[in-house]
Length: 143
Length: 162
Image (cartoon, rainbow over all chains, first blue to last red; front, side, top):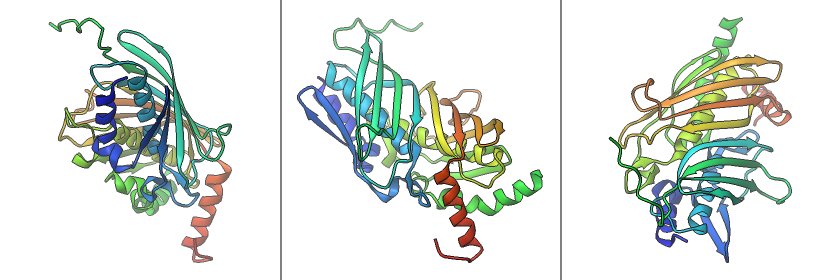
């Protein structure tokens, strides 16, 4: 676990601005995105902004990587693919992530967000993150 | 045909940011809007930093900007009548955005037919040849978005309030 980096992640102005919380129980991490009108993308449906839900999934994915192992730096997303399965309604959103594989440089993470029912996800994310494990060799010098 | 679409885009343009609380919260601006193409920007803001050590904007700002600008290109590409919903959004983060720089995003609807549109977008911080991120997305006009659009049109004609 990288406790100090988890704090850095959660106190970053953007993350604090939108009130994201991470609830850790043992080795399991659940992210909470409390409903706020500033998260609404389309008030006519009303639905949360796809970008807000995507960003929340990225934060939970990073948090899960930090919880699962000691890292020297915050994970950096390389790529993410987000599927939007249902409109995210004007309610709190929850998310959990699974670290599918974590190597010396790259981690592969899947995350899922839901609202009322865990079996009715609103969005899923699959992403690769650049990581710097504490035990890894220093990055090769760039010439 | 394109003139009709352009007219509808011009009519709706003021609502594209102002009608979306999240876009307002992130300070988005609309730069250009033509049928099937859209350009928007996100101003640099210390309140939206993702890594306090480097001062770069949070990836979420870029995610939201790319989603929004792709949605606008899809909206125009589909005839500018119904607001499409994002089916999927794939983003490659090519490099960190430079601290202090605004992010600009340009999207193009590559193909649309019926209810589905395919869009590609690039986000950069000054030089489009050196992108911060690129995105590819698919959008679809759904029942929920169609119903919302009908309510808007009725309200705009003054038939009933929203």
